[in-house]
Amino acid sequence: MTAAIPQSLRLEDFLKLSETKPASEWIDGCIYQKPMPQGKYSRLQLKCCETVNRATELERIALAFPELRCTFGNLLIVPDATVFAWDRIPWDTEGEIPNVFPIYPD
Image (cartoon, rainbow, N blue to C red; front, side):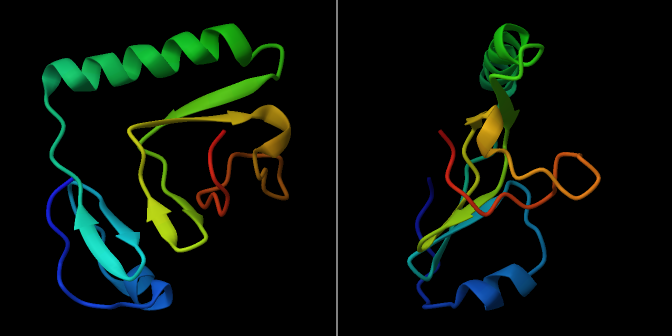
């Protein structure tokens, strides 16, 4: 993680900012920009999520997501990979995966 931008910012104000590439995270009012992923790491991240999903998705046990923004407490983070138990996924009203996950990953 790179150095924080030295400012205190409310979550609501952070969410109004433009998306950055690579992603930025908000932790206790400070903004941290993640380092840019590179080839070998990106491939590992993909394989990790594929492996978890291959073992858990059909039986509705869990799902793995790469680079999913999660908001909870004083954190808005974008972990490299997350896994959510199936019954904790915040499905939208159409039964689809939502864009916003206002919970912490498992």
